[in-house]
Length: 152
Length: 118
Length: 368
Image (cartoon, rainbow over all chains, first blue to last red; front, side):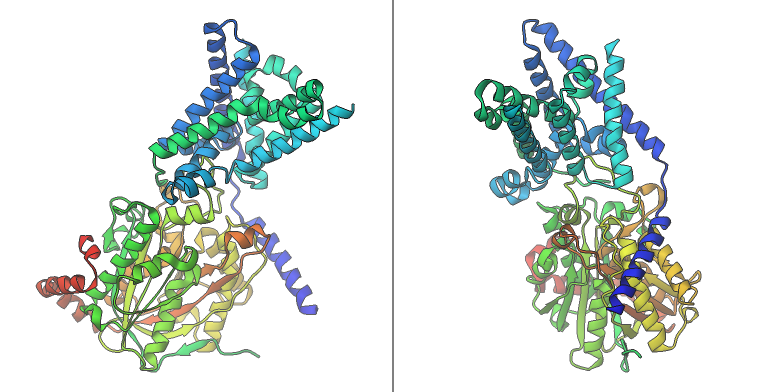
């Protein structure tokens, strides 16, 4: 028992020491990069949306947004395929993860990665290793919200 | 001039993601999940639409928008179809994005190959 | 009160051949000129990175046997390991060879583990010639332990870069070359670190434990060695080790360094440095071995560390245990002659190259 306590104490002291030892990188440059890239991606999305509404003035707003997201998803998926998106991600961090393009990247990248394990067991099975939780959590949460709205 | 709002709000949301990365060391799957929940909650409390009015793509392009449309679909589904709507509404509203992501991922993974980082 | 962890070899097994092969990024690193072979492309002409890793190991093993001027039939046993699940690279590389195989897993400490075991077997006069080999590949490690290559994420400042490379050496009871004089087998040490991006901090306590045991068992001090080198603690981990040793009253001076920390140049963006089995294996079998053979180093303490974790364990909230094995390499100047004779007998070497190659498998003939 004593030994366990001693070990716990030692580990806590060590964790504290390591935390202090970890090199502190300046946060500001990376925050700025993510702001910049995130903002640009959103502006591109707005641009696509405006163009769609310009060409198809009768389209419902909801459908225009759906098309916008589909175009963005296509672009991100393509950039992932040709090996550019991970370079953007290295620079932008959160700036290219949080937009819907990051969702697209997190589906395409494992699919590419596990290509060698075959179409079924590789691409299809591994496709959702990263983005799966997003869909699961989103669906569960929205279902719960729906049920709550049923009673109010 | 609404592009400025789009840029500022979209950039700010993405920067929040970067704050999470720097200070909590969480992985991208967790970031995406966090923001989807934020979107669902914003929609559930009716805050999303007023923001979306002026932020436009600034809040619709981040994954928050995905969460919001899931919740929006579920809510309007409940209003028109009752309990069944809670089951069908969310995915109905977001089906476009999910199918696009799956389809393009499938096609591009057949065409391309992953390359080593340098 | 302690138990002895160190074996002091009476018959002093000799390292008679070594070989290192690395990827293009590693070739541009600080040890670039010392490697035997730098691949132009890290898929090495194979379909998948796993296959490339197997081929790298095979190349290293063939290269080391050739360097020792032996035939495949002279080898009694192969000791090898790697990072992949069920150590597939090693066992699949071994199926193309016609000698016995023992698979080891010591994570990144495998090179020292295999050499210590080989030296123990040879010291007991059971076998004459044993080949030790290990390697790692950035892309296979990345997909097994971390994320897909094309995922756009950032690496935290404590993360390390898995070295694409494989090293092999031939240990024999007779011949000329650096001798293995002592080996210290390490305990598994866990100080409760659970950040998989901070391997240096997780492994440094294991390095400390083995180092203390080594100095205690052999009654040596850091000053007795020309070089004390850990495997892949990285920048952060090696600083931690220096601090930990200082707390125990032992000062590590300028003769201490870390392979991972030295591996890449500053603008190669590898953050805390290199890691992986290949990191210590390629440095040992190129740079350190050459310096020993030329007599620049007389006594080297080589102690790579390994983090014994798996993704399953860390997802279940387990902490990361570390292990560290140490071997002492010594060399007297007489090897210098051997080195000069190697260069003058190029023709002889070429003839032998063919025979080794033919005896292994057709696939290997494409190599080089």
